[in-house]
Length: 238
Image (cartoon, rainbow, N blue to C red; front, side):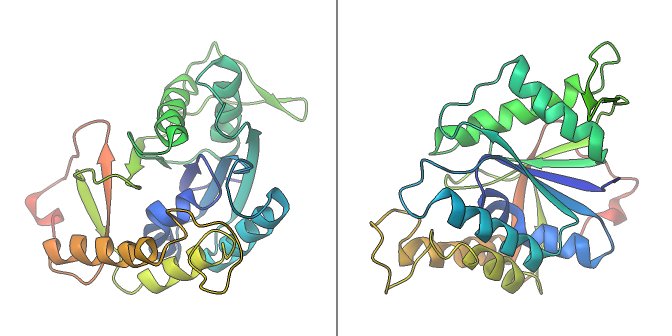
């Protein structure tokens, strides 16, 4: 299956939190989008692997993505080496995305920065003809995405560009709240965590509103780039 956009997250819910509005908008515009989770978030304080698997499935349905897979890397302990890079390369060559979205370049959770660099490195390596890979016994063709963008997570990182998600922020929040084990619920008996606080939930809207304010819209999401952005003319800018 050929996808336009493939979004990677170190944990189930990373993609929804970082770029759920952008994904919802791109799908509404007719793009085919997929999500690849690196781990199952098994070290998370709240919930369980089984619960988070179902939550990820529910969130994917809400967003309307065409595919979602999990690479079963070890939460907290995966590294940027050949074995893990090959897992990413196989997904890139399977889905052939033009654009890849991945974790923040630096963040509070160590897996986010690691996942960011791992996916970025694999995007380059996936285009090398002498690196061979196969799925189900079939040799894959090389593929390198045209663009790699990094969404923003816990830390405040100044974006290189922002996407207007006005009209899609509610869909983003709905997908996030599909992870009911992870986020604010005043009736939950689960242990308190930073992301399960009411403040964190409210901060998601605040950040989107603040980025929207800066570009004259209601809501926006920010991204950082690996190379200069290019436009055909000044009129391409909002």
